Image (cartoon, rainbow over all chains, first blue to last red):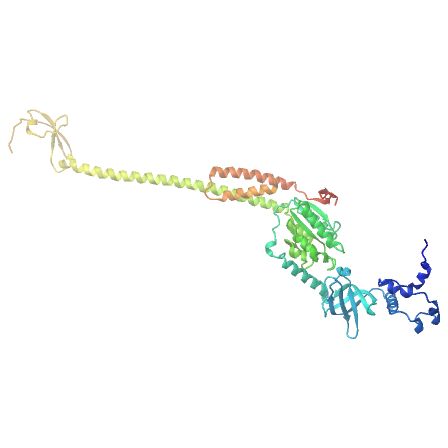
Length: 424
Length: 70
């Protein structure tokens, strides 16, 4: 069975005139070829009879305009901005005397930091085309910069608010860096200045660490995804004590990946404490805000993450001093206590002696009052026989009995001449 | 024992030695132990050298850390 379709050549002859229908996706219902119409005035539309379709006109205009203008930057003020449900952005760009309708297709918005606001002065990069459905010129935008970097500032503000709403900026989320890190993961470009600086600082400080590089592009379209992926790898690996994410200095645009909300969230999700070190900017990047620690430069990050040999040696010295001082102080204190104890003992014992002496004197005094010596002192004499026994009665005195007469200052040897009894 | 563990133990020892009413004999024991840790930790420091490596993820999701020539 052979089909009776018109030849390819015949089909092609109609293309120019009915291309619009084909592009718009409507079924191409090719009208029967009417070569006599084309011949009438020499070109389509030359006469009423050869009038062309509206869509043909707009399509032709589109081709002419697209062919005449290369993509270029246009400046003006944003008005009537609308973000359509389908994700495309529509707005007008205008100045004092003219305006042009603009569109940013959903798939082209990635290079634009944030949706512009009405009234913003912007420069938009795109190509001029024709929107056939309305017969309007339309500027199809793929890049945009606002005066005073307004779009980036707006993007930062939006991202900051979203991170804040999720509690990612709370100061109590910040974790302390480990005191003695052994393994430091570095998420950065393997060829960049940042890595070079970090390695140099770590070597100079003679820090006892392993630096594990986790490569990621740090600028360009793929940078956000690559940074997120590398940070996720570090988490899944689980071997890092601390993470450094960053890059060396560059233009604001070069550093932009570190303001990407996805990257900021990946930084916030780091299992290990993380240091953000992005360029040399005074401005904070979004990564800086959510990281546990912010370093102004990769070198500063390496300083913050590592302890130099000198620092550690000093720390050991301090500990040795503390221990030594304590032990010396303890020994001194024990020696002093011992001395006090000895002194107390001596004091106590001498007090006892004094008491005893006093007591003795008191007893002696009492003995003295009872002593016959006192009586003698008053002039009395006491006779004793030679054995020392007191001769207290006349009967004890016999004739010629020798006895001692004890007087105040001595003993007088005596003898009884003749005993006699006297009655008092 | 790692450097970190040694320093942690040294800190414990220093703290304990600073406590009142510690037994003298125990204090001297602790001091001796501290001296040992100090020597070992200082030895660790003397051998310190930073190594640069690279994280490699294998197809099965496991990781390798390999030395790099930098």
